[in-house]
Image 1 (tube, rainbow, N blue to C red):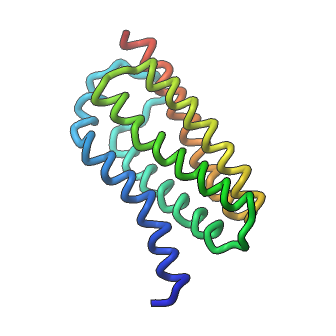
Image 2: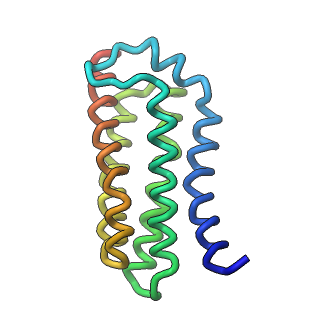
Length: 156
């Protein structure tokens, strides 16, 4: 297997594994979600795994573009922030679904939003396409913030 193909597969596997493990740990979360009072724009439960799978693939491709770029400080810092946002992303469903800490989860999501924005800026500095690939992720986290905020208000 060529080195670049192996690197691509690893870059795809990392965010998909983060999502898979997080999803497995919160596998009954849609039962909880169905019972919550939700804002009017809340999508059906099936939308979440589809959207997250697409976003994890985009993250993997973006990280591949950065990993295979020329060594630089932006590349190193971008990959560090990318890893940090993956960790924050991993824990959000634990707080929201398992802990039912809705307001804390919203604050945690704001942290995630900020880390995704910083990741985009670093990735863009290394490879513009890598930055662009993360824009749907930022948009989805923004939408998730809307949902999370209103769920925290509607489900005290």
